[in-house]
Image (cartoon, rainbow, N blue to C red; front, side, top):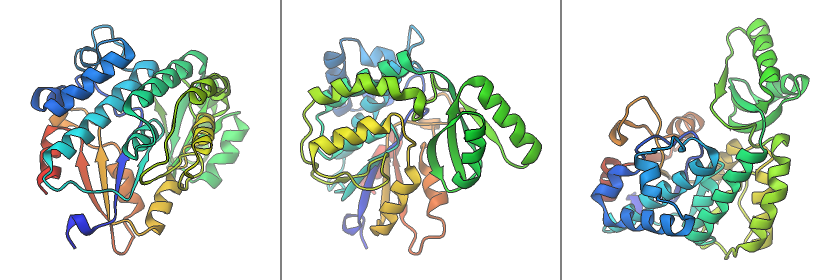
Length: 324
C-alpha cells in the first residue's frame, strides 16, 4: 500500500512543544513559511518572527504568546509540506492535543488561520490572566489517579495514555499528592509541568466564561474532514454551534487524548503525520524530537496492523515527509 492509499490523520501538539528559535529554519528556507509568519504578524499586531526566533522579552513561555507561536509554527509546517510535496497526503481526519485542536480545525477548513490566531491569542490571554495552580503528570491510570486527585482538591486535566494521567491543582496540594505517591507508590512518579495554571480543570472556569464571547464572534464552517474533539474523545459534529461548545468545555475538562487515539484506531487509521513543535534538550530545530510521537507509539504498540508515523516538524523532516 502506498502512502497515498493509506488512511491518514494529521496531528498537532499542544503547549510544551515550543522552544526559543522555533520556526527560524522554516522561515529561512521556505517562502511558504514566511507568508504564514507575515500573516500572523498582521493579524496579531506584533512581530511573530521576532518573538518566535529571538524572544527578546522572554515571552515565548507566557501562555498568551505560546499558543499563537505554536499555531503559527504548526500551520507553517503544514503549508510548507503542501508546497514541497508533489503529491501531498490527503488526510481523512485531523486531531490536536489541547491548543493543537485549533490547528486541526484550520486543517479541516472549519477555521481560517486568522480567526484561529485570534481565538488562541484570546484563549492564552484568559488562561494566563484567570488561571491559577500548576500541573503534574502521574504515571497512573485514571482509576488510580482520580481518588488521589480528589483527596487533594486537584482536578483531572488530561488522559495522555492509559497509564499516564495529568492532574492540576494548587502548588501545595500537588506537593501533598506527590508526597503520598512517593510513600505508598514508590515506583510511580509525579512529574511537575511548566504551565501558568491548572489547565483543563475547574481552575479554568472563569477563563472559559470570558472565552465564550470570543467563540460567539467567530465563524466556523463545516469541516471538510473529520476532526477529533479533546472534550469528548470522539469526532466533532458538523454543527458550528456544537464545535464552539466543545471548544468552550475543553478549557475546563480533561484532554481526552486516549479517547481521541482510540477513536482513530477504531476507524482503521494507517498513518499519523505530526506537524509542528519540538521537544528535547538540543538547541536548534534539527535537534528537536516530535512531541506526540512517544505517546502515539506507546498507544499503538500492540495494534495489528500497526499504523505508521511521520514527523514534519522542521526543515529536514518536512523535506523527508514531502519526498517520502
